Amino acid sequence: MKIFTPLPGEYVASALQRGNEMLGLKDLTRKDFYIKPVPRKGYGYALGDKYEGRNHAIFQFPHFFTERHMSGEVLQNHTLYPLTTALGRTRADIVVTPVVWRKICPGCALENFESYGTVYVHSRHVPASVRVCSVHGLKLMDTCTTCSTPINKHQLSKLGVCSRKYQFMFEESDSFSLTYSKFIADLLKYDGPPPRAHQADWAIFSSIRLKYGNEIKQDDEFIPNFIKSEFGVDVKHPARTYSDNNYTILAFLGCETAERYLNLIFNTTESSRLGKDLKSLYYGL
Image (tube, rainbow, N blue to C red; front, side, top):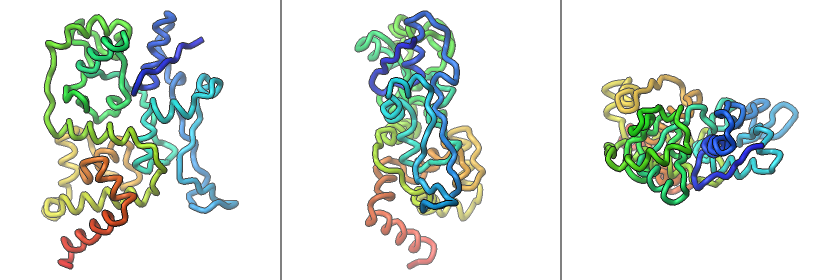
């Protein structure tokens, strides 16, 4: 029997881990919280004999969630699903429940312990490329600075005691990392329909070409090198085969804010303006 009472914005694995600790159970395994995307049948957009045609991802859930009819609520509020949906990611290898997830913000830890009596992991801190808290602007911790225990081995229930000393360990982040973490946090609030993959690609890569056109003309490897220097990851694949993490980075580089990105997807005036600006840049029209 599991205890599952997620707190506001809590990552699904964090809530399950806290429940296990309350019951004196062992740590989670991947199968306890992994929500698996189901591959599409074919690649068409229209329903028919040959193609399934859906423009959204569907998932297989751990039995714990389906038995209690919590699948939809968990997916929308306690995973990375809203982020992947906003970016039009519907492939069979999208990841809405990353296995590596234990990072905490010292500011959030203090506030959560005071408000809820426990420290927990927020979904907005889970993406691998997020290094700072979007609320406090503090660098995320993967090691407890009080007891030197790695967060991935630290009991969440015991982080509350350690967190009392975190106020002396605050480390401010740079503005670039903070802006990126806000981009992620805002897209995690998305609850609209998924855009078509080609819509997301066009908005993201057109924005990159417009913003960094001169740099790209001088150096074909400008964007991969820039991402490598800022995020420490390699980005060398065609658009739709980028990992979710790398695709999110590209979306941020092009659009900078969630509002800008979503406007390019759903506001025809904004998308038309982007198209005209691109023509002006490349053809002088």
